[in-house]
Image: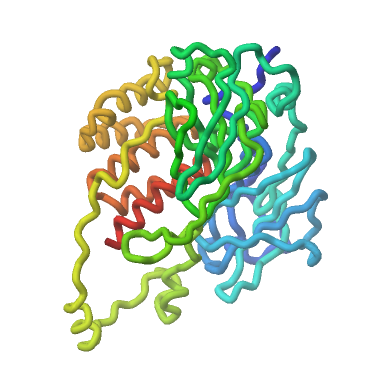
Length: 413
């Protein structure tokens, strides 16, 4: 059967439906600068990712309105918007049905009053969500299970770990050494869902113990590496993918200082909100000298030792550890398998920066920045590493979460 989706391919389809700031605003709009601009929408599976450029003069939170019918001149008061902080410039919406969805993005004042005038092709966009394909229905569990296939995948908690067991289903031992276990914060129903999952380990035997981040629900899937490279991965929920989430209790865990591990997202904050008396245009608060009491208190604070680099181990996607596939992936695979795998962080960082200097597909750029973030982390450049991991958060949320937590912990030590 013709497969519309190949794992590892570009699964986002860009919808160039948004406008840019150079377009002419309607005559009744007096201040065009109060609008967001460069509004774009991307779709992947049942997710819609909106990006835009914030208004240069409206510094308050940004409101996202969604409707199943076109907007009028203003947004209806009956629509409850989502809200993101100024500067985020991205929002991901999860859709449960097919159809056309209309979005309006409204900037707001510092006090949070939205400028909700609707201007077509400037601060609005329409997104068409297609119904699931026949291949997606098959991947969702329809159809017979192949004679030689993994089944009976189960995950159960035990203490601080998760015990993974499965039925090899007659697969030869040599092939089982090429199995790949995935972990995801969302149910894995289709092969495309693996793009949002984290590779736990390859060559997983049964039983296997995993130690995920406590306090979050986790789902697992196990597939053969040869199916990934051939683009023939099929997910059968309840067979080779779990349908019930497991969660490790966060009680008793700490980040080294006796404090419970804090999960993302971080609270919204901006320089202006922290120092309202600062210059609203520059967003840089005025520096004030520390008081004598504060300086004395700081002298008594003992600095914690630098974090050990052994806290984390380098991670790589399975597709970048195989034979070069040609195209833009070939050079990235070479970097990963040479300087990155050899932990020559300076060389790997230089090569990745040169690689990213050229335009890359969103999927490939995200993987390259994931490796670049690790080179910065293991080089002690934690601020630079944090930026890279935040960049890939929308495409690889679970993996980014783990590295962001590790980077934040290193920054506060």
